[in-house]
Length: 180
Image 1 (cartoon, helix red, strand yellow):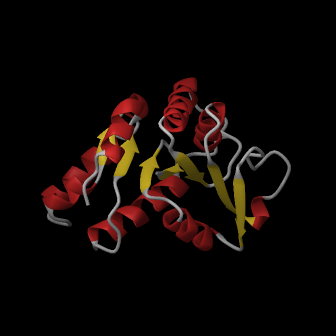
Image 2: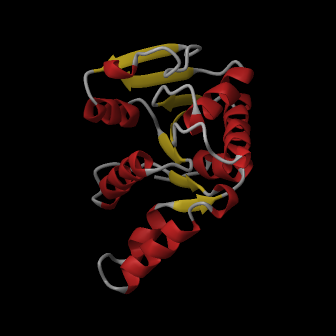
């Protein structure tokens, strides 16, 4: 299975985020799963790629051409696709993967998550989506989504379209056992 991992590109985070995301990447590689990601060398993206690479796994990077600058992109990808813009990148990230993991990130990661979550809620896609809740990072996101349903801005059933998990084995078990 090719798994899309969204996540921060920041190199300024607490070490636990990098460590747990690299651990996830290693687990993906050990289980024979490929990584499809935004191609970044740093942050959660770089950590996931380093983990998969440590197990000699398949890595597909996808990034807009304007990111092709020294030190920005992960250089050990099995394959790399350049796009013209971020929208084309997101489309390919979705098309080239079978599942989505959302590692901690900022507004870009949120935007990617909410688009894929919306597509699933509209039944335009059917894939497992996991928020990788390292150190409780997504606890407030979960509370916000629950509040949104409580206030009737969305149905409670929409909450069942994503899961919040904090251990690599649990994340991969969920993805591998997902029933469409």
